[in-house]
Length: 90
Image (cartoon, rainbow, N blue to C red; front, side, top):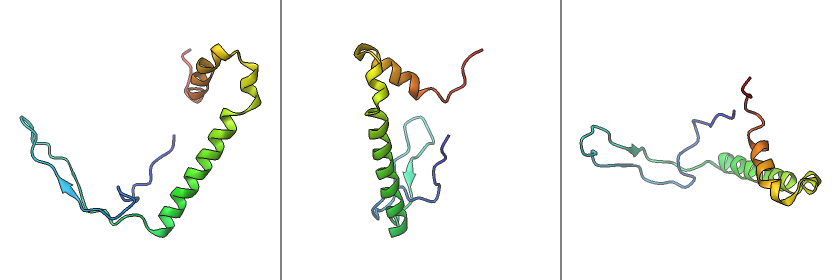
């Protein structure tokens, strides 16, 4: 499982923070502090990760293996692949 970088600002661009009104029948107030935006290094790293994700997605989705699966069974086969990392019930 991948952990998120807790130091990455909530907005890529500098944006002011906000706080909502108190919810009816609740003490909960949602809000965010000001976001300074991403640094050049953070923006470059995010762009690199997005490019890698796109490349890997294309590699997986166009792999010749999918030609060996009947067209009607491909969605189910892809769903099984998505959950392959999860432990199976004994």
